[in-house]
Image (cartoon, rainbow, N blue to C red; front, top):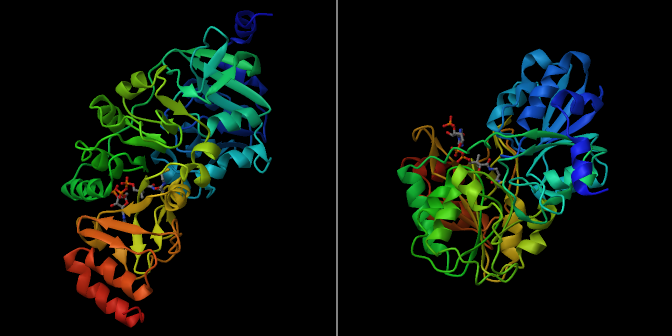
Length: 431
Ligand code: COA
């Protein structure tokens, strides 16, 4: 049977496609900007018939109506990385959070630690051979779908066809719902004077020819905006956004000096504006792969001059970094931070950077603090940490004693807090 016939037989409406879902099932929801919004609405319409259905996912940008208190007992959300749409529910105990490295999320599904009954995904239309692309979210969605018992796919006419290890044949899908709506557009990070200064400092540390990874939050854009005079930069990162397109168009990102996938930007997922989504469509310079590949520290390290740039919420005077919670209150997740810190640390000429504004809440809180707030998790350990950057400068911590670390970190704290930090460091026996 040719693939067109197979495809046509599987096309149905959302209600019919979702009829296979039973109480007690675990569902995987396609992540990032590749969320299946029509299937989610259809699922919520079925709520009265279902109980104890678990929805598991990374950061998603579509609405997450299933965390509404009215669905309690019907649906239970389980985030592997907390986004704005589920944060309140997690913080109120109405939804779950499972800490896990981005590099290891595929293994949860492949090794049946979290077996998936049904994957709800969003794909590009099939090509002439019957292959759909996972589009803007390959990283964890492809491995989850491949491990699922049942795959329900939206085939969205507006999902770009990204290249790489990003395809599934229509014969593998169990039900198809054809859709046509724009992908959610990501809000750009905050562009404050502090972030611009941090961006400038980091840009000066990045050599021409480096391969860069940028984490999530306001930091990536601030760094990218300061790279306008660089040459031959490469990209190997879990995610990227519009800033990368601008640098490619200016001829600054060429990937020509990359030592792993030369000539290619490698990523797990993408979110940004329509401009980004059109740029990556069928573009051979961009390759998307599952995160067990992109985020594997050994693969990351195959890029010489790998610069990993990730943000943080708090750093203590020994160099422990917290990026996923504010005290005991969960905010996001580890994502790929430690994967890339470790990969960059192993790379020849590599540079693992953690950067954060020196203060939060209008300069009332120093983000560099004597101890992490009670209940904080350690995202990057003090054994892994290399370089911390704030708008006041750079603290090189690797191979340094606690005394030297405390001194270096106090030097890049906001001046208003330096005396207080010095006093606390003495009391703790660090100085
Ligand atoms: N104490 C209290 N509140 C703090 C704080 C602190 N030490 N540090 C930050 N905050 C508040 C901020 O004021 C802000 O609140 P607001 O939104 O009400 O203004 C909020 O926490 C978020 O902080 P901000 O620094 O603006 O976050 P961001 O959007 O730039 O993202 C991280 C930074 C660290 C949260 C983000 O990079 C992340 O989630 N990282 C996860 C790990 C990672 O880096 N993975 C790699 C990418 S997958």
